[in-house]
Image (tube, rainbow, N blue to C red; front, side, top):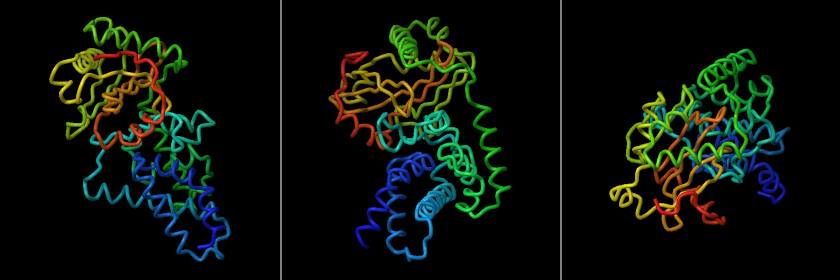
Length: 312
């Protein structure tokens, strides 16, 4: 392959990776899909490709759909058993992030909801909301009609909107104050204060410190408060499981405020928060080692700053 063709592909690699990550919810799988796209590009008769960007988008999207359908057919990936891979803000896979729709499409909340959609609905939602493709363009990418694209988009938006919190999102400084108070209540065992800091329709989703076979979900304020109080209570057994005493740092993960748990400089878990109208509206706890690889690598390259909790 000539250098011009390689350069042409590399110029769009970041966009393809961002697309694949939103479709697959996994950075590692997204990288594999992009590499497979490159191999298709390498083998293609490029003189017959009129619009390379459109061709690459079509190939990458359909490779991702093949992965989703294959995983579902093998029962390796079912709704309720999978949380997306969290990424530290600044990761290029989180782009584009110019509009509200683009930023929201990559939050852990929305990526988790997308797991409940069919592969086609997920693809249409991502292409439309995150990358602003027209229905005509989406129809060409997925080999469907424009009407089918519109129907998929409507169903996807309806299902996502039905489970999204409607309150006003907090600015970063306000969100941090709420979560600081939340952590103080959680670590002190003040259940009544925890309950008061949760929205009436709060949800909490956890992978059970990476040990549960299915996701743990909690939906009432009392149940979420009990789960959080238990989860944030330090014990010798938890320290042994984590590999030592934890330090907890604030960071932004997938566009929202998060607490990153670190032992000896290594990330062992993260909890991402959504704050709405001065209260915690949702929490997503991820500690499975295979979901933290990229976040941990990014963490090693940054100065973590002063921890919010220095010896848990």
